[in-house]
Length: 376
Image (cartoon, rainbow, N blue to C red; front, side, top):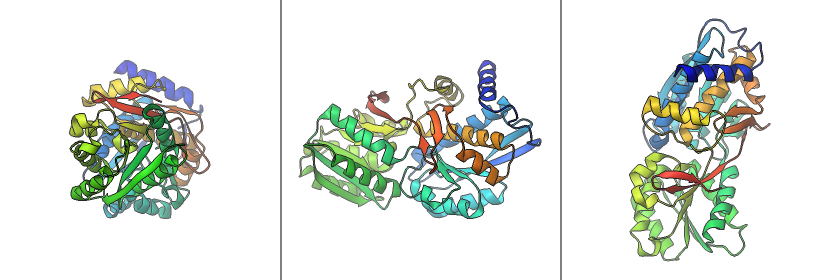
């Protein structure tokens, strides 16, 4: 572990200007994390907290911030927009100079308005839905949007599966699911010879509703099923589909919501072969990725997922911005964050575009034997 921390210290120090952190006074720098420790997003949120704490410990050990130390203040937003708003308010009132989260786009669309109004930079580490960055110039994300990842997912899945009759089932009332649905529908229209034979919404809190939607889809005999929903609904849909003769062998394709070992653990064999777009995969040869996976597994006893990698990178990006700003003033941190270009991260070579969207390459992966394999 000491060798790993020494290497991290060297890498961070070489990446930053010589003066980085020089003006920071000794003491604690509070950053806040609002995540889905419970509720619909809890499949993703737990790993976010674990990874963020690991990154804070590594930043502090590296000396990136000179004599100052990061402190991570954490709140469970229970996957609720109201509670996410309360969490951000509490974190800001408690002295947080920057924020991470919330886990779900539906929460961010409400809670991020608090950060914008109070001039506190917020970095979304899993919010991929439309409209989040439109809230204002203090709102960033390091998660690739569905508009970036899903068109590639559709193209790669079609090259591999050669489907002609596509269907979409999606959770009505959830911001992520609606955004994913809209991108999938647009992307399918670009594929020659492919028709959308069924497009069925269902209430996001109803397993009976998703089963009813699947029955309508089964009647249309698709040869691929796109799923735009959060993990609890995805598990229900995969399991129910495999009980229907017309959908028993139809491949599943989706987005970020597939990308956690927790989904495979709960869905079991029915998830095998599912294709999804991702921001990260454990086997990718990105800077520091192998060390991150080893350290995470040694410290926490389980494999990190995409959401862990994005949270880990989020802390590092905030620390980098604070060091470059040589200040804990939220406006200075925001400006430094907006200026980050070509930063080596476990997600890949990372930059923020002018609209505060992240820029790096997506990964297309497939579930095989309770693990992910890169396919494009």
